[in-house]
Length: 313
Image (cartoon, rainbow, N blue to C red; front, side):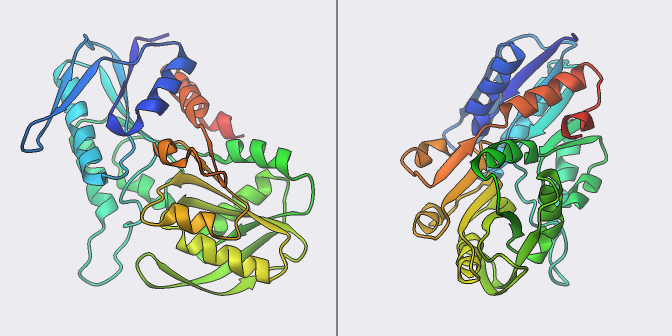
C-alpha cells in the first residue's frame, strides 16, 4: 500500500481516530493552537514528504473557524512537501447556499469550493451533500459517499413490514426515492412544506398514503428540527403508526434536541459526521451511527486505486 497519513482538524477528532483504527494506522501528529487574538496556528509534527495526506474536517459550527482551520492545515501539509492532499469533509457547511435566492444574493457554496481548491486540496471526499450540483462547483475530483447502506442495515432490522419512506419536502424526493429503492422498492410519501423565512417551516398537507404504516422520514440534515417535527405531526394525523427519522448530518442547532424530544418522532437516527455525541448521551430518542467504516473503506480504495462506487452497488 502507498505511503499515506491521516490528519484531523478540531471538528472530527473522534471520527478520525475511529477511521485510523479501521485502517490500522496512527493519527498524524498535528498541533493546532490559537493566539490570544484568535489567529489559528498549525504545525505538522512529523515528516509528510512524499506522502498522500488525508485531512478529516467537517465544516460545522463554528463553521468559519472550521473552514479556516482546514485551509491552514492543508497549506501546512503542502509546504511540508506532502505528495497530495485530500480533504475528507463528512459534513460540508454552507451547502444550503447553493443557488441565488434573490437578485443580489451570493452562491456561497461555490465560493467555498473555490477557496478549498485554491488552498491546495487536490481531491475531495464528501458525504451526502445537500445538492448534487455542489460537486460541479469543484474543479478537482470529488468522491461522494452515501450513508444509505448504514441506514438500510439499521432500519431493516427494526422494521420487518409496513414500512414507507417519506420526504419532508419536494426537494428531498429524489433522496427518498433512492432510499425506497435500496429498501426494496418501498412506497414513498411527502409532506408539503412552505418556508416563510429561514429556519421556519410550515407543513400544509401529506401526499401519499401513510395510514397504518411505519414512516421513515429521510433528509440529508436536521438543523433546528422545525421541519422534522412538523412533518412528523402531519404524518401522524394522516394515520401513520409511528415515525422514525434518518438524517446523515445532525446539525442540531438552537432548540433542536428539545424539539425532537417533545415531538411525536419515536427515534431520530443520525451519523457522527458532526461531533455532537457528548450532548446526546442522555437523549434516548437520538441514536448515532458511525460512518468511520465507510470512510475508511473509501480511503483504502483511493490509495489502492480502486472504484469507490462499488461500495454502493
